[in-house]
Amino acid sequence: MRAEREQEFREFAAARALWLRRSAYLLCGDWHLAEDLVQNTLLKLYRAWKRVNMSTVDAYARKVLFRAWLDESRRPWRRAERRDGSLPETGDDTADPAEAGLRSWSRELLLRALSEVPPKQRAVLVLRYWEDLPIAEVAAAIGCSEGTVKSQASRGLENLRAAITKSDPDLASTAARRSE
Picture (cartoon, rainbow, N blue to C red):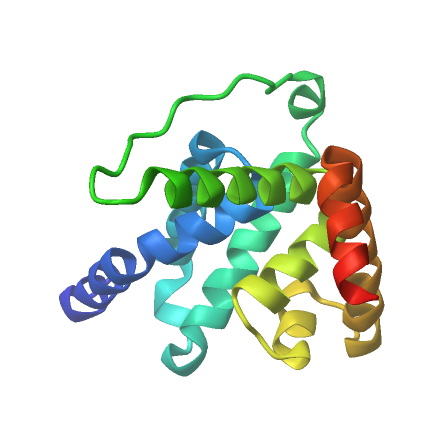
């Protein structure tokens, strides 16, 4: 690879690594696996860098990340592994403890519920609502039709609501009373 293309890749990797890591975490729910996915994604991107269209490099990276996650989730040893432990997070000294606790609680509730959503629906939810991509780009990233994205998003939101209701019935009853 020429020196200028290699420098372009290094700049891309430095600028997008955090973004890729966050997206990978939302897909898999495990920071360590997310880092592995980003590493695999960057390796695959590096191999194809001379053929990558610079105007669509973010979409291509997203597609590579998504496919790397699907490949990883299909491995038999991943299905047998149990990940029910959790690591403590570092505290924020400047935050109000009540607000920090509420943010932490709601983030954990959402991530736990998101992990119960089927993989393709989870991917659509992450790309559509977290990454804020239009339906056409989500369809291109996943490799399906726009109608499939819409139906997977609808079903994914239903499953997410059901998982949140299952995790915290009090929250669901409070939300139902507010909507009346």
